[in-house]
Length: 188
Image 1 (cartoon, rainbow, N blue to C red):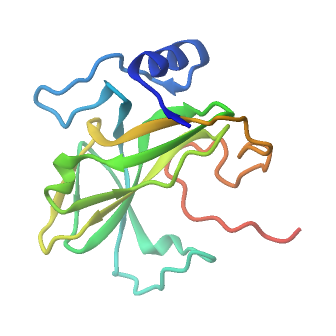
Image 2 (image 1 turned 180 degrees about the vertical axis):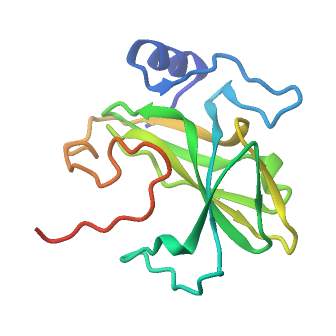
């Protein structure tokens, strides 16, 4: 399994629409950097956020998520309360090839401020916006800048093509658009 370089990422983005929109160069002046890097792609966070709140005193239950747990916010700068959490989405829409797994890691600019980004791996043949989990681990409010970099995606090409892809499994987050809250598959 090999880590893929900028030339491979560019080719897949242009020829197979793996990343849309695609920024061919790393943009860094005056912003948290985003775009193509040497061995990855720095994704941008959109201006849509779901910020967790305790106003309604509900319980966070991944099997039965209550929308009252979050407040919707749209804007150029989101403020994440101290020791709190928000969901956001990428600007980019991804179409992962069948023989590729992508791993996403938070950017050091945010990590050095106590802001931790978590994203689960992008499985083979996953398609959609990426829902981003953002934790403010500090005792202070934290700013997240919309339309700027939030994390870096690394692409790993498998030595073999998988037998069953995320698309084959009809994954519950396949073709998601916008911020997608937790889902549990129900018995039919």
